[in-house]
Length: 316
Image (cartoon, rainbow, N blue to C red; front, top):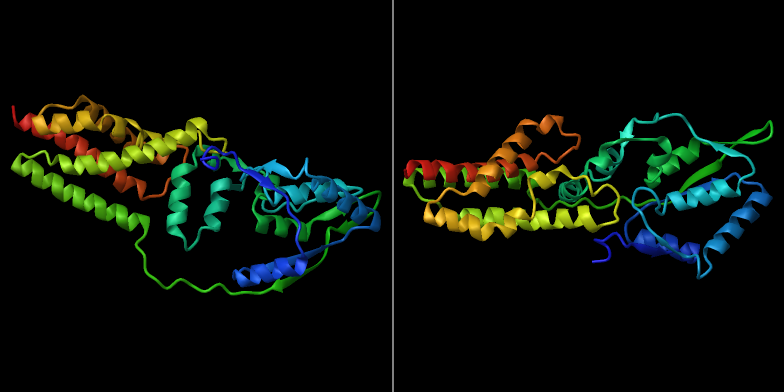
């Protein structure tokens, strides 16, 4: 619950370097080492800052995935210890990426992780970001550090003197087949469309389909609404997917099923049909990038809403 609320209080820890490297090797993760090109005074200052940060009263901090994480904190301490200014490369330029772009880079080969993140993260994650903001991702920070220069009094030196891959592990590829979110969503849409056509021809409401679809959409909507209203996580409050998945589906489910079973027009489904139609039509213009699996899911809810109108019209 605290994680969902964004109350992610992380704690700075210290461990033996060899143990740290062995742990990563055991987990199948590679480790790159960048040797910082610091003077003795700067090294002393950096150690002092780290020790100060490790004091019991300072070691706990509120983790923020995009703005204050395990990549940005070390960067800030390193910059603070340097006598001079760290000048970073100008590529990629400011506004060339968004937070979502970078997250997608590290979700390659993990479609369900990408789908889940895209469901929860709203339009704020699609705004262009600066080079400094890109450094929330450790590999981006490593690349920026590798090309950075320390600018001092009429002198310039590289921030990093050498780079070494101290743990070189090739992760094993997962050969087990698993359907993607888009494949599952398309299958659900096909089954929903087939069931809807059958129901219209037989003049049957088939309320069981609606119980399943709107129930699942309502539960998902409760999660998204909770994140948007209560969570401190960044970029979860401005989520246009709340027009598709929202708590109303769940709370009004008894009314929906009642209307379908009695053959009455459900005004909630009329409103839902209008909202979903606008969402599909305006999909390319919405300032938020969605996983395309959202489209067949929205269409499934749309045709079930439309089927209620068609059946009530036929029964007149």
